[in-house]
Length: 325
Ligand SMILES: NC(=O)c1ccc[n+]([C@@H]2O[C@H](COP(=O)([O-])OP(=O)(O)OC[C@H]3O[C@@H](n4cnc5c(N)ncnc54)[C@H](OP(=O)(O)O)[C@@H]3O)[C@@H](O)[C@H]2O)c1
Image (cartoon, rainbow, N blue to C red; front, side, top):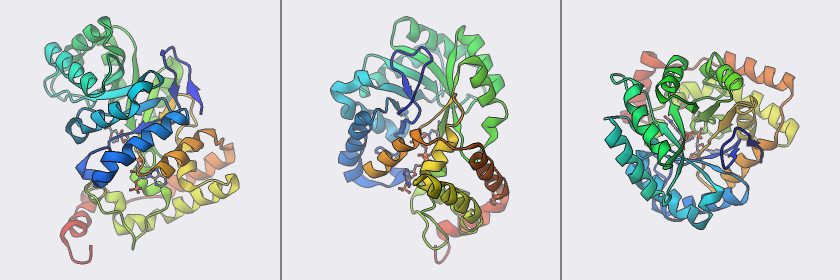
């Protein structure tokens, strides 16, 4: 495993583990996953040197935090725990109370990274950062982070906090490359971190799914990328991933992860539905892509034009309610 050296107590692994899947009905992995497999995934991740574990108070309405806290158990100090607050009423007393509730579910006295899950469209960050500052002063929170923030808002949050907002957790993958415009350059120049979520585009980049074999769960039923037409359109990108993967004795998913963390300021937090997936994802931290490979993947990604937005709506409705879905 490789780690970031940016002055955090526990160093952050370049590949972490996303735990939205833990106990969340929308992923549909069921009770044996929530009850045992999720725990096994965390234990194996620790063995393999993963330190970054990402959760949120909203995942499974607290269940993800509970499962993670229980699974880390006595090894909590080897982990860098990142959780998130949904900023519905971001006044200081509420922020403080929600942090305590998350810490209790996680069985810890310190949240290593406490992230604002998404920008509140109405309330500016001065309000929430007052609570964050107090939490840092009393030692309940180590680092403050944000998620789904623009660069302007990230920097405004830093001004409001009066110190660094370590990370911005955003969707970043070969299919979603917007963070390359300004977030990643900022993180590289200012010793900040971009935490890439959905780095496998929820499994699309594994190459496992195609027109006649589509994943069935609520998360992906609502994701236009899994429409039959888009799975067909993704064939060129998957072929490019496969070709690079063959050269490394790796899988398309591993190459997609290696691509996502090629900047030293980016770490990725793939979710996993099995211990095998976790193992494979962790091994991707050691794959070094050549400049030519990065270029070839970028070209294949540019050529992938999925149907999205309004144009995707009829397909999504058909996929959900129509015949032969
Ligand atoms: N801040 C935010 O707003 C936000 C939003 C979304 C996610 N997140 C965080 O980011 C994490 C990851 O994002 P995500 O779960 O949306 O997407 P992801 O990591 O791109 O995809 C995860 C899914 O891909 C499949 N997969 C994983 N490893 C694989 C492998 N080696 N080979 C083949 N398939 C593999 C699994 O699904 P199957 O096996 O079922 O195909 C798994 O559930 C979440 O757990 C969460 O912590 C944050």
